[in-house]
Length: 164
Image 1 (cartoon, one colour):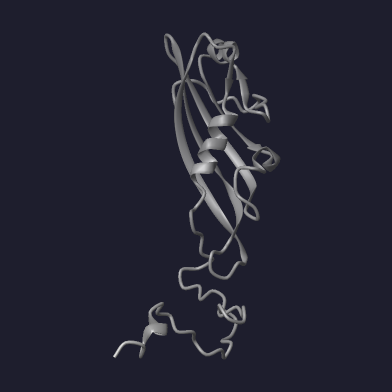
Image 2 (cartoon, one colour):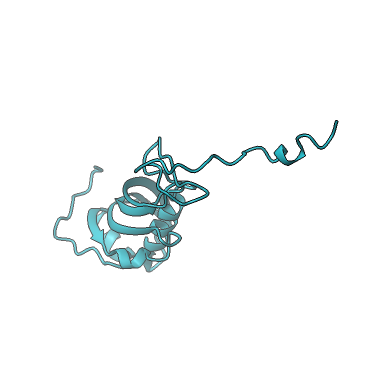
């Protein structure tokens, strides 16, 4: 925590738009709030979704600018890339940004949305050893084997025996 006080009674706006004059008047601000997931409904590709978001912010006032340190934590539901089951995943990311003292409003929402978008995994697995689905019958191989004969995995298998 920085030199300024932690304002527990400070009413953090749900849209995360702070008045620059208030932050300068207080000499900085440390605050946290749980933000409604509705603000982040379009950040992840469906069917993935963010279900809980908490933002911790620390505003430090300098001569010509305000430094914002932030941490975004929460929970999201994501689909496994192999078995397609939905699973919950925790996330935590930090950010750092400066804003001019001359601006009327410091809008943190865009920064939080960008931070959340960058935390999205390219390929999420429900567990490291997920067996996925059978490519022939669709059986979840984590639950039980399906009995299908494994397909020939080589794309060159059709050429076998053609050239002698």
